[in-house]
Image 1 (cartoon, one colour):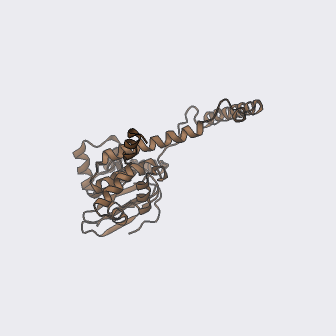
Image 2 (image 1 turned 90 degrees about the vertical axis):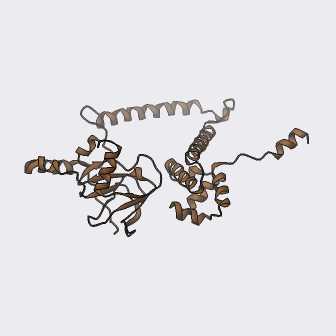
Length: 289
């Protein structure tokens, strides 16, 4: 073996994100169970992160968000870790695409026959005609794409009723510091804990998409703990207010009373126009108290 080969053999491989997180955890003397308890990330997801198999996590947002929370706990740069996770996911996707598209053009056995090519072209024509008919039917003049939010008809009916009884009075007191606060999950499997100023639990579970939780009116200093503050729509007396965040990260001990939410929004700028539009109220699933 030459000197260059010996030197190459002595070089240590670059650490992946998962290896760096694991090494830092072990240096701090932390076990997987301790990290799971502090970050609220399931242990099997932590093992997946340390192995570097980010594509095995439920979604890209989970891979990035979990890794940021893990990095924050062990004292690493969470933004740098998040960028590296995104880069590893992109590289894995590129590799997968390359494997799917790779074939030898010169190998006749791997090229489609002329009959198969004609059949494929005919099938593509049928699909194109079907797609044109579908979009003409559902997205023709006067028809827009289906709304992402639940059916707003009940809210419109409520607004019409309020007009008959004095809409101006309802609008004036719609959003107040003592209003009813409601959190609605926008995705499935969103873990959240609601509790009061004394730490008394109001609700702790993984909420389903469309599931709602009304903050009890007698709760003293209600607060929230979740890793997905961006996945909750919030209303006060049925009026939408801005989300707690537009990105996924661990948020804990944040006040969520009507007064606190309004003060938070005023500190960040004037309330958006959306506050003057009613928020649809999807049927809640069973709520835990």
